[in-house]
Image 1 (tube, one colour):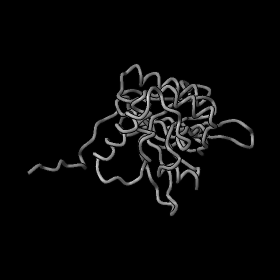
Image 2: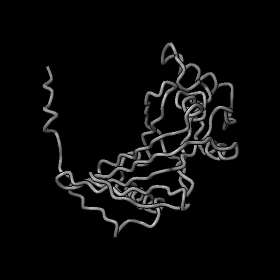
Image 3: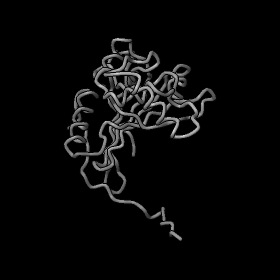
Length: 216
């Protein structure tokens, strides 16, 4: 029988360095790009993986990992099927949270904001580069729907593959969503758990952003 480790003592110290206002980029986008470039250079597995948190119709939180597929001054872009669980939740409540968990660098980025679906042109631009296999998987099934078995999934995938050639047209329910950030927090692990947390907060009154340091 496996012995359960003592979780109260399972920890490592964070020693990758501190993070200060003096080294903070002038915008959240530039700071995010710096850290994202570091994650890519460190060859982290799926550096564009992020936790997306939504709320169900009863207000209960729901979360899953998705991939960042676009980034600009307007926000963070991901893709999904509007008929999926998260798509249905976003239709009722567009408030979301994101987390980029770059553990190997002792960093994380936390985002809060709202998500809006992209127009057809924006979604097409995300659909067209997908490999045929990924297009088949998205078109052959309805994401989050109940299926009887994996065999059923595989059969639907292959049947659609046999019926079509080349790249597929984008399903109407599949598309991109942009998360417009309200806050973007940069978290750097610190020695003795004195973490550095610097958060960009949108200042709607001034039409810009303010930066605040948060206690660890």
